[in-house]
Image 1 (cartoon, rainbow, N blue to C red):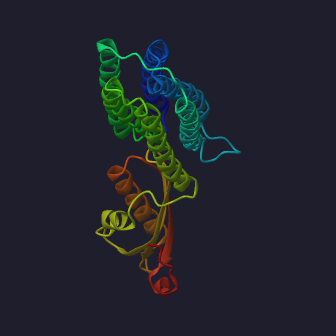
Image 2 (cartoon, rainbow, N blue to C red):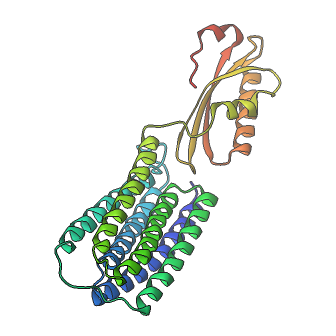
Image 3 (tube, helix red, strand yellow):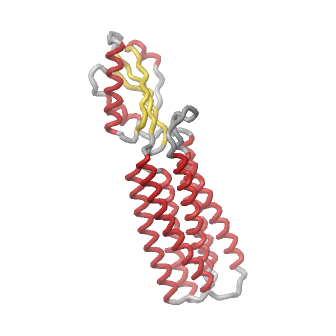
Amino acid sequence: MSNEYYRKVREVLVFILIINIAIGLVKIIYGYKAGVLSITADGYDSLLDAVSNIVGIVILLVSAKPSDKEHRYGHYKLETFASILISFTLFIVAYEIISSAFERFFATTTPSISITTYLVMIITLIITLIAAYYEKSMAKKLHSNILLSDSEHIKSDALATFIIIISLVFVQLGYTILDPILSIGISLLIIKTGLTILYSNINILLDKNILSTYEIEDVVKDINEIKEVHNVRTRGTASTIFLDMHLVLSKDLSLADAHRLSHICEEKICEEYPEIKDVLIHIEPEEGMDDKIEYE
């Protein structure tokens, strides 16, 4: 990945970091003042988001290092580890919310809710939704795994904030028990988001196929003199993909012609999929097709 990629991803994370700190402090301060546990818990979740943003920025600085003789494929998988770390921060937040919720079941204080409470939550909800939309759009544009994971984290924050706004209505009507109950519900949603992020990033570490085998075959199958394409495998992240494949060519082709065809094939694939950073092609003579191994 280029230095430009890392620079743009860091800029997005710094922007989201500032938003998370601001929203988190507002919710925590107001939550304590009003005595509303769910608002305070939501604020701590935003601050933990900020911590994960900082970790992500630091990891990106390291993963931007070019490949060296010990790391021939570069350091791009550090971004995957950062995404996994985000999932674990979500689990910690969920645990803290559940612990606080069980304490609130036995509390005797009544939350103080006013029009200001609603304004604080609605404004922070709007800002959170804008931040989530922006980060996800940048994740798609840059093919960034860490931005996509973090945008899912922010979406869970927005959902939690929306649930809290609904709960405030019931609490104001005297159903204070709904405050800890909905806090537990929020924590379960956070756990679900964390598991989703963890699952997708573990698949990256396990080198799950990134692109469809059939799509790659369709790109090169019409090139003259290529008899067949098989054993197509891809791995990596959405922004950094490594591809290897087997090309079956006529046994009468010279080594120079076979080399030329492999370069034509590589150029056509990389033109179609610019996120592919390296293509390894194994050449087979036509009569060797009976020994091929298929991976679907």
